[in-house]
Image (cartoon, rainbow, N blue to C red; front, side, top):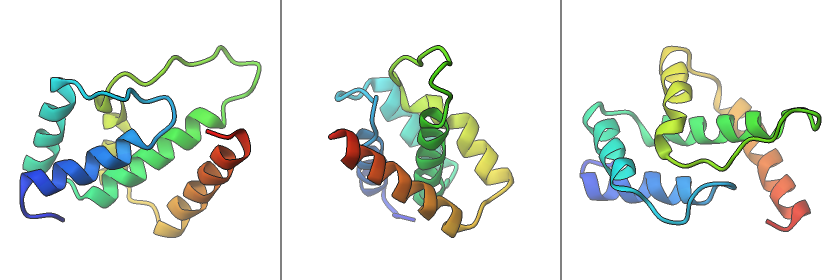
Length: 110
């Protein structure tokens, strides 16, 4: 885990902004939320896993389901971060979903 806030912030936000359906600009609430995660000493690996898992869940919704709107804030990922802090999953599980998201992005040209 990065030892200084700026490195931590850059690492988290770079991962967040790479996701589909996220805003291209950060709000002050996003920056405040990253600081709160840093103060709680939440590892970047947990945050990245939450981003991957939540994105995979969004993309796995049935085509007949009502479409979800765009993600408006990093804070939307807090429930999945808390879930992973309480019950970590193997890195291999996250890697599988990460590769599926990457493949899907390549296929749709995102």
